[in-house]
Amino acid sequence: MKQAFLALIIVSLASVSAFAQDSSMNPLIPGGNSAPPGHAPKAVASDALYDFGSALEGTMVKHTFTIKNVGQGYLDIQGVKTSCGCTTGDPSKMHVAPGDTTDIAVAFDTHFQKGHQVRTITVATNDPNNPQVAMTMQGIVKRQVEAVPGEVAFGDLKRGTEETKELLVNDLNPARGTFSVGPVSNSNSSIKVEQLKRPDGKPGALIRVSLLKTMPVGPFDDSIKITTNRVPLQVDVFGTVTGDLNIDPAQVSFGIVPHGQDIVRIFKVSNQGPHPIKVLDVASSTPAVGAVAEPVTPGKEYKVTVTLRHSTPEGQLRGNLTIKTDDPDQATLNVPFYAIVGHFKT
Image 1 (cartoon, one colour):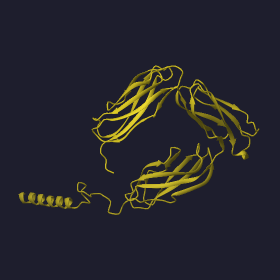
Image 2 (cartoon, helix red, strand yellow; image 1 turned 90 degrees about the vertical axis):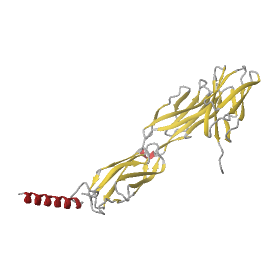
Image 3 (cartoon, one colour; image 1 turned 180 degrees about the vertical axis):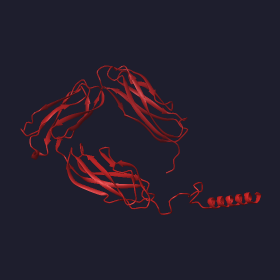
């Protein structure tokens, strides 16, 4: 009985040893239950370039790319990215068997696009040799309507100035029949937009853009949204209203400076208006830079001395000076500054 029990133990230990040495049977050993070498997926795009020729602006260009798994393991589609938010890609399968395919349905929205366009679609996969499969859609987008000029630039204008500019809305595809424009709108109450008939009698519209006296001092921008029975148009409007107070130069550049030294720059605040003003305070966005204002001609001109302190640590420095005045229209003026502090080899 004892001898039979010992024999059973020996046989059992031998079986365990054989099981332990066979990695294909033991999942605890590295490589156990893994696919034999070479059993990996392989992603191949059947046609990686699609040229749609030409399309009218405002239409949707669609195409389906195909990726085939020519490897021996399962191909996983891990995501699809496109080079533009106007383009989407949607795979039909996320898990592709050997020899099988997945379709990538791509849609390109041509609104507000024009001319030659190229969009890249990148598919992430588990193919060890081709983890990023890139495909391209390209072609020419033809505009259906246009605004001439394409933007309204007022430039620099003195506070209280009123100025008017005009633009024409043209039909670039008259073969499609009747062309209508309107309504038009914008968001800035200091810019007035009017839609009028074209003086030449052609289809489209004349858009009159007026800058009003109420526009405050400083840069401004707005967008005119023009509705048509083809596609919508958007025209940018921008410019700068200048006040009586001017800064020269408009920003402070210390440049590249050595560490451990005080660096001084000077700019002036000049008053071109009829009433005297006072500079009440100058504050810096960082303790590394200090500024002091002193009158040159009381009420008309101030000199501002700006100091980059020697204790400023090495590296790039950007900030802003805030100048407070008693001018009701320009109570605050901003002057940016920048510096690179340290020793740099060329």
